[in-house]
Length: 262
Image 1 (cartoon, rainbow, N blue to C red):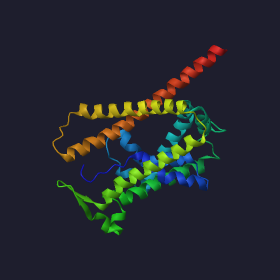
Image 2 (cartoon, helix red, strand yellow):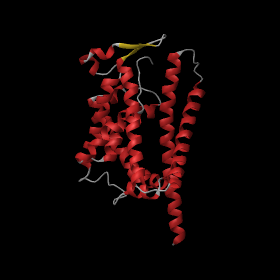
Image 3 (tube, rainbow, N blue to C red):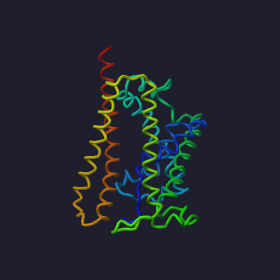
């Protein structure tokens, strides 16, 4: 596992989302920025070299991204909006709660948005992974800048962790701006934050349990890093399952409530 670095996938949205101002679809950009890592969550292992290539963008990322985009708009968007403060939920749904992903008119821009999001992911990884393509052009990124005693840390790894944190900070700032601008009450915000924290915590606990069940001993830093990466990947998989299950249950309950009204 040495040399395999997995940035927190959510951070990649920070590089793709700004392109929405140029007419690209925001949700497709964000999902596209995650798409090269989808294979990790399917295989439950960091085995995604083929999806982190130009060919992989068109052969895997675009079709997989469009599939996830369809699931988001058809299954998850309304249930997730129900967990948000009222005004923010309405803003998320917008005037068109269910985007027609398979519409012939919309498909080209959605596919282009997914592809662009995926390319921002590849560009980011190219500079922040020790196997990144940028290292052949900028060999100084390989220079060791820290000595931990048990391992030398190259500049690219520092960029890897720093950029992930900066990306998360940018996303947190945008979320804060949305909350400040929606006129939501503190009680609503606290309730939503508690709900999402519970969902994320549940996924994290399941991810750690998954690694623990594997029974692989941790005898050194490499094993600890491998287990941490495995737990992060498993947590992402469980989060996807939890959200999908919630979306299905929410729609079943809503359909039942509508039948009762009739």
